[in-house]
Image (cartoon, rainbow, N blue to C red):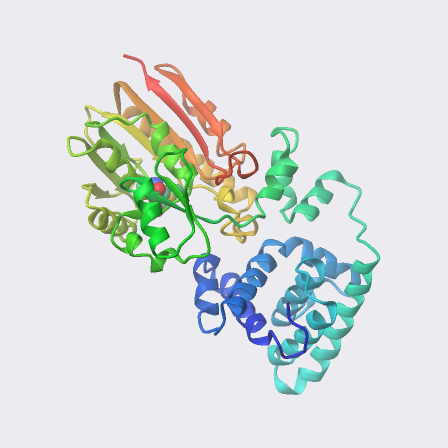
Length: 428
Ligand SMILES: C[S@@+](CC[C@H](N)C(=O)[O-])C[C@H]1O[C@@H](n2cnc3c(N)ncnc32)[C@H](O)[C@@H]1O
C-alpha cells in the first residue's frame, strides 16, 4: 500500500498506539482503534491503520511464533515496545500485501521511536535484522508444526486451547476459525420497516440492503454507525443478526411479560420491547449501574419502555408468579464476536471459561425458576466453548422443561456472530 520509508508511517504509528492501548490498558479494539486513527487525514490511511491494528492483534500468536523462528532469544525477552513494532512489521510481511521493503523500513523507523534516544541505533539494527531474516524465511515458505492442533492454531491465528476445544466436537472447525478472521460489515436492526431504513440510507448515499431474515436486519457498507441520524434517533440499532435471532428464539409475542436477566447495554431488551408492543412489558436486570443506565438510555432513544432493575440476577427480587418469556443472555468468553474484537481470543483463558461456566449455570438455574408454567426460557451466549454451551445447558436443565431448539450459529455457515442459543417450554 505504501512504498517509501516515511510514506504510511503515521498510519503505522496510529496502529501501534491502538495496539498498545488494547494490550496495556485492556481497552477494546472497537474503541481504541477508531480513537487512535481519527486524526489521520485520509480515509485510505485510516483504513490501512485499522487493518494493521486489527490484524496484528488477531494474529498475535502466529506472529510471535514466526518471530521466534528467527530470534536468537525468546520473544518474551524482547522489550515490549520493540516487540510490538516487530509484530506489526511481521504482520505486514506475513499477510498484508505490503512490499517487504516498506514493511521493514517503516518498522526500523518506528523502532527508533520506541526506545530512548541513546538506544535508537541498537533497536533499529535489531528490528532491521530480525525482519529481514523473517522476510527471507517467508519467501521460502513456512513449515508449520506437524502436530495438527498446533498447526491449525497457528494457521488460523487462534490459541491452541480454543482449537482443542473445537476439534473432534464441532464439524468443520477449520472453517469456523477461518471465518472468525473475516471482519464483518455493519448490520443494523430497523426498529420500523427495514425497507424504509434502506431507502433512508440510500438517500444519504449509503449502500444498504435488507437481509430478509431476520426481517428487521439491514446491512450497510463503509459507514460509521455513530454518524447515522437513524441510529442517533433510535430508528436503527447497530446489532448483529445473531442477536436479533436470539430475541426471536425466545418465541416472544405481542402483549407478553418478558424478563431479560442480563440485559446491559440493552440491545436485546429494547428489541424485545418492540416485539411485545404497547400491551407487553419488559423487565431488564443488570448487575452494573452504568450498564443499567445504558439500557434506560437506549429505550428512551428508541421510544420503548423497559423497566430496569440493577442487581445480581441470581438473587434480585422478581415476580414470584413468573414471566411469559425469560431470556438469559449470559456473560461469556465472547469468542463468538472475534470477527469484531480480534483480541478476545487472546484475553479468554480456560480458567476464565470455567469460572464463567459456573456463573452461567447459577444464572440459568435461577432463570428457570422465573418462567411461568407454559412460559418459555432462552439461554444465549456469544461463544462456542463446550463448557459455556452444551455443558451448562445439559448440567442445569432437566425435568419440568421441554427443549424447543438448540443451535450454535456460526460465521462460516450463517454469516453471523457465533452465538449459541437454546430454548425450552416450561411444562404446564
Ligand atoms: C452478554 S452481556 C448482555 C448483552 C445484552 N443482552 C444485549 O443484548 O445488549 C451480559 C451482561 O450481563 C451482566 N451481568 C454479569 N453478571 C450478572 C449478574 N450476576 N446479574 C445480572 N447481570 C449480570 C453484564 O454486566 C453484561 O452487561
